[in-house]
Length: 328
Image (cartoon, rainbow, N blue to C red; front, side, top):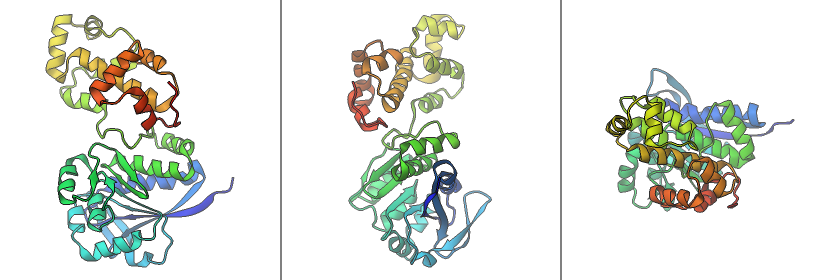
């Protein structure tokens, strides 16, 4: 098979860039040649070129941005990091960003790199996202941008922005999918040992991560993992208590103490997570999804989704299903 013509991807960095904001997208585009037969030529650039300090002990070798003015750049991405606020105040740097981005097919940012794009005037009138911890500041500083605080990444026309660190990988996989199809992007995700290609509108916080954060002691980690593997089973308090080798009364009290949620609420969230994954990845009828995720019938699934997400299963599927179908 002959490789498709190379697309030039330029990733912009600045002093104290977050290394993973750079290397995550770089790895996606670099591996695409081997896994998807799409060649991307990667260039890492900074205002003046040379070695740039990252937020780790590793410096980054870069090309000066001025040397790229006559190069046909396909994808232009600004990385994030603790140096982003200072970079967003550098007039000469912002001028170079505007100049290079003007003729690119696709412009994006990872994490707080959105502050650079916004300061350069490239996000005005667009929807965008940045790291959750910076969204309030971002919205206050740039009131002409519609901030989607909870999204993993946002595509608005040819403008792409993503949340922190690993979200840059999700965004880059979505860019590859836009170029050569979702099937190829899934193959690439597998090679990178990514769990799945996450839709951009999903929350920056997964249900599993929320449970782990609440369960700081780790006491019920094994039980929570067992629940996720057995969502269609009878997960009543007696069953969970037996699995935890505790009396039902003592289990219910300690589970809520350690996790902040009642066992019933935790079970519902685990089942919702399973149902959402099925809605995203399959065309199974809603009745089958409800059964496989432990809700028994589609009406109980609908009520649970409306309580937690304020969206019905059919609407969720229309927005996030990778096959773009509405089978119900």
